[in-house]
Image (cartoon, rainbow, N blue to C red; front, side, top):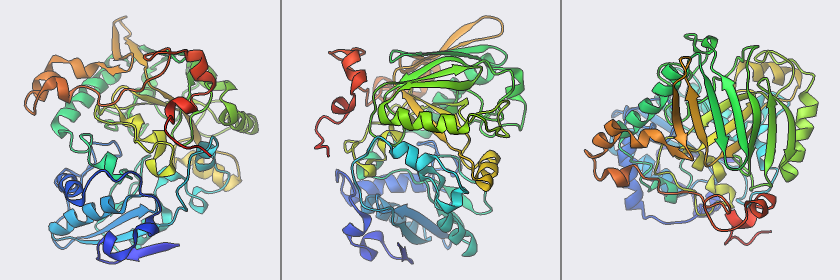
Length: 460
């Protein structure tokens, strides 16, 4: 079921119940409109990193298609539409019915990520919605606003993402964070990976148990070979390991460990063991780990075109968040929060991904053959990411969850242009994990992190 709103406001066209549970209502429409107007003036970059989404290319007389779903707060949808209509654009709103809001379960990540058919038949959460994309093409819209994450498809029309599900995350400093400052933070971070790491190596650790190293081979830096691994990267989602195709001599070896992913409830600590860039074994993880192990075995003898040897789960996504004002949603136990996917954007957080790329040619290949594909995640909340150059210089990009670019003198100087550097460059939210930065035992937490992360939720 969908509802198609042609040139009317979201709240006029639909009742609140048609959107499901919108999550915490922490801002009035006037407050949301101020943030929407900010975005309506920001440059369009076709990038999903928060802080680098803008609708500033919209001109009077243009037609915009705004796509959301029933888990979005309708006031956020309405605010963006109003801001663009103020610029003289015609904005049509289309709402995809994704079912009732509910609490997360431990298998949601597997269910929204893993596929064995062409993804258009059953699109995954981060891929946009194919029929809405087709609607934008067939009706010749100038701009499509759609999608919560993942790469933005290449299209003839302009295409920007829409990741703010709740008023809480929309009316936050992360949304209107000064783009000039955020750009410099990204540039300072990326220069180390792009310049210093080339031909060198990376050592990645985290107190939850991650300890892995890999070589940044010169082949990974070949121009035009890997989208978003180039001199101008994916701002707000900096790739700390090159994406596919993976070279045959990839050396990624060690363990990745954690208790959260993008889109499920927290799980007992999982340990993903790597050798030569490929996942060889998955330990722990409760029901999430069980499901991962099943897919690992299912794909073990499949040769995917993007990987040098058989198997689905290869290390590549080591994505670094760069916005210090991102905070975990207060309704984190509900689907309408967007889950832990939102906090992956916070500066210094790394989300690890193993498997095929969203909408990559290897996924088309697998879907046509009925083979399993997709990629699964583990989040690192206190990582230390250290580069060793080919000359032996060591540089920390992240130090125990703190993005080191935030303390760069040039970054602090620019921050002073917008306010207090200490405030602008501090993280608004830091997770509290027993035995790491909070009282208690990490071993107890690792066995069952759910009551620590959902302390106030009435769980089913």
